[in-house]
Image (cartoon, rainbow, N blue to C red; front, side, top):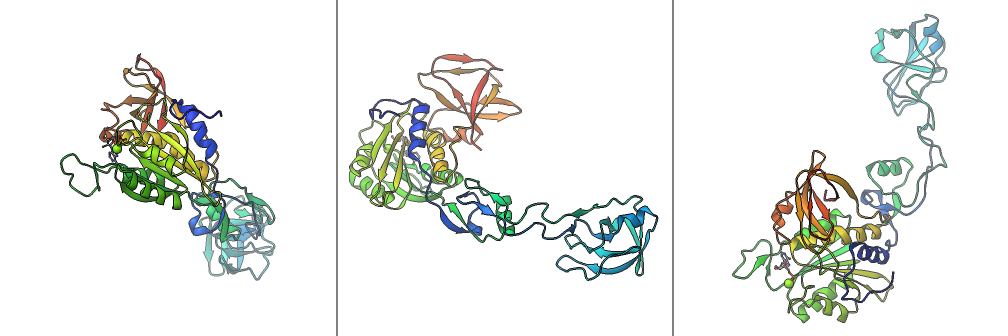
Length: 408
Ligand code: AMP
Ligand code: MG
């Protein structure tokens, strides 16, 4: 994409394209199985075993010869008992059976297992009560699930609990995965006090720090709280500079608009962060700033300057930071996961920018909430999605289809 002048306003799609283009997957790291949930696999996994390793019973019961029951030979001598982990010592021959537990290897000679519930025992004899016994019943054959030498997982696979179980099954204790991106969250503002404190006149609590840290963690990153920086060149330079030394992504809240103390963009440029865009045609979230810095070690650090209003911060995170984190994690960019839904009630869209509006999707319909603007985080807690309305003055009618971005 062509480089844009920093002060021109990009569309949401243009901005997202730039973000995704500059976000590159991190280098894989050998990682113990206990730490790979949610990580993306970076190697081919080949099984070193057959699974199951032997023909096995899938129920507790009796291993028999199906033809015995078919020929009405239903009173059988019990040869032995085989539990999971043990191996049979005797072959099943006509008119005999072996008591067998789930998972235990099938004895030689047997070709079916009858569930214990369909049998009656009397001393060392068992009576089969199942009228027809089919060869192969209740048996899982060796290597039915996977074969030794078979590729079971490919690079790029997101590791969920099932994949972790499979990795353990094929003997892997350590695997190469893309590590979680380190995301530092820095909030800026002379008015901010820590979330536990009582604000004095003119002050507000820092809600964005905890919110953005939680958002980064929810996106699969390892988030670090970089604290509060004051609106001075020195403090910003110190705080952002330290973030640039340790993080893959630095997310800054506040100080990117047009106020006299909005010093973040100039500070970033002084620190050698190359601006890629400033301002997106979006509501809320217009002042969004994005850039990157190459370190001496050849790594790229992405920097997002989010507007300080909490809902603007969250919307910009969902639209731009989350996709960047996903790409760093090794996931393929999927675009924004928008779905179409019908409006439950009329909605008047006003304004000159495309808008994401807090909304509730419930019972197949979406209701835009009575939201009071980008400082109104309270209403966002009633929302489970953002409803998208294109720019312009328009009355959207109940029943009309609109796009939604899911929040959870
Ligand atoms: P700014 O983007 O710095 O101009 O801030 C825009 C608005 O967001 C102002 O009303 C700030 O007080 C508010 N704000 C900035 N940072 C935070 C924060 N960390 N938590 C809550 N509100 C904030
Ligand atoms: Mg500010």
